[in-house]
Length: 225
Image 1: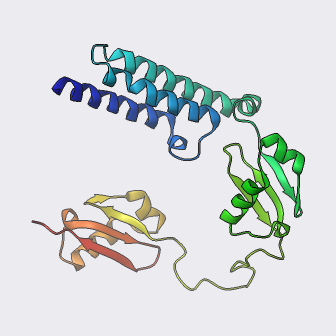
Image 2: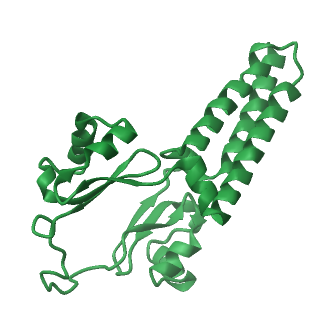
Image 3: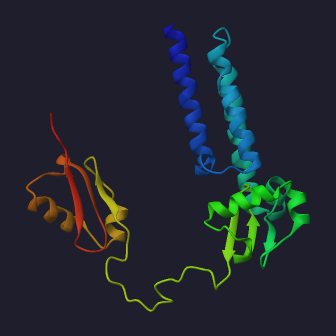
């Protein structure tokens, strides 16, 4: 039993490492080659777990091979647009000026229900409000509304900024300083020290310190047992 647990832990670490090497896209909407790689890795990883009599290399080597192939294909797609189109296809416009391109839908095997569902996900219930709708290579649908139906921006309304320009970001998480966030919001170590000193706490006492480019911040102290 202990041997099975150890083998499972090792395979788990190998798969985590492979997915990390393959990039964050594996965690989101997948391209066809990425989906195939993910499915194969999940199946190959189970070999050594389900069959303890086999060596660990029966899972580790195939997983490493698939991850290497995916990394090489990704690098090839970056360098060659033709290779990228061959592996992942290319975006297809299915809606122009409110008119559905039925030939494009048929070529993608998209039904009208599929298109309407994708539009509703973008808060569009009337196709005539869309200037352009594009089915991306990962199957998602991007839309561009007619300018008459689009939501106006602050620039359109000529509104001047009334608050912070940056979103609230974590500066310290569980005692660890996120220096990039500090710098991006115009803060530095001196600001951080002064803030902590004003609360009479040390860095190790901070569970969360978040803020933006203003002087407003949110501090959560650790509850020490």
